[in-house]
Length: 416
Image (cartoon, rainbow, N blue to C red; front, side, top):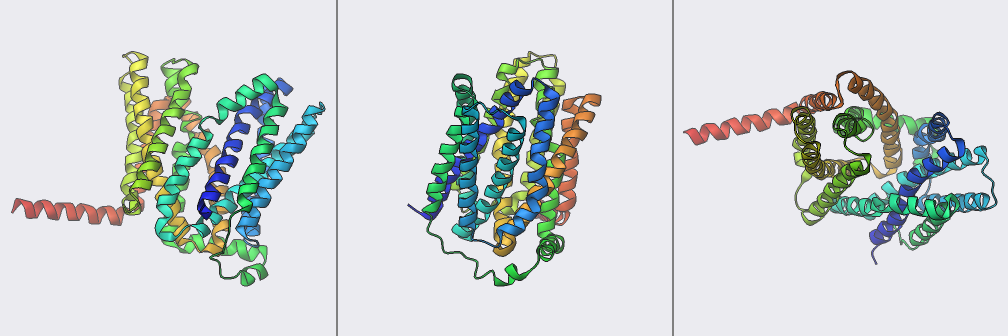
């Protein structure tokens, strides 16, 4: 078995475990507190430390072999889940224990995500990054596909402690698989990096993003996308399907399923067409991605007089298409970062990227929520994505200009 296959197996196990907890934990907290406001406060408190510590994690991870950090993170998650399962078995439902457990799980999950991203880069040749990122996308989505259903089933029949015990087992298996990865690091030596202070390392990461124009451009584009369209799952999709078209909540989950189907198909397409340089078409894919969302918004506006299920069928089709195009954007972008960001600062770079996204997404949800309540979720969806298209055109105006001139020149030659 190859090194990357070991990482994929371990990642499937940890991703499956990580997809169960966010579905079941809110149910248990709501049952324990009997209050939506306390439940919301609980998850706000527990997520803040991991978000605030993300930049420091990125710097800290660089001191050590990424395989060791990945193994340490997933093993710690297994230990935490084992302890929490035992406490729950003995009836220790103390709120403070649950808070501490959730905080630590969030921190070590973030550490696992950062270290495994850099480990992935170490294991894969640059020429095959897009191919294996496509495969990783397929496996990630397949891994989490049945996780919510299994988690809620076990929770309903056996209780929360049994769910946590299953997570512990999955994380132990993931740690065992990680231990089998034979790794020769591409990083020639970390002596210089280890001697630098935290402030110096952090400043180098910021300086790299600020001075590398291509990196900065994509970094800012990701932030724009996160602000304007990352709220679709929380605000615009429910606002359109449930609030406007009054579709039953029991079938609303099909929206996420349709999107996941598109993601899986896209991953297969990328893996089978590894010779296509998707990075060269990323500006067009950005625009196409937003155009599909604009079409969803316009469909909602103009089909209101039709049967709701006619619109919903069209929405599901667009969601499959959206999932397909989203991965065509995300995979080459991730591969670009993995190939262009020096390996010795990748963990701090991805930490800064994750930190910025975690700050910008709530702001985008807040903005979109207020705008949608004022002018409608579908109109907001259209406006937000038109703004994204404008930003993309501004960011890639030189490339778009060259392409337009080439098109006009071709037409002129054909006319002659």
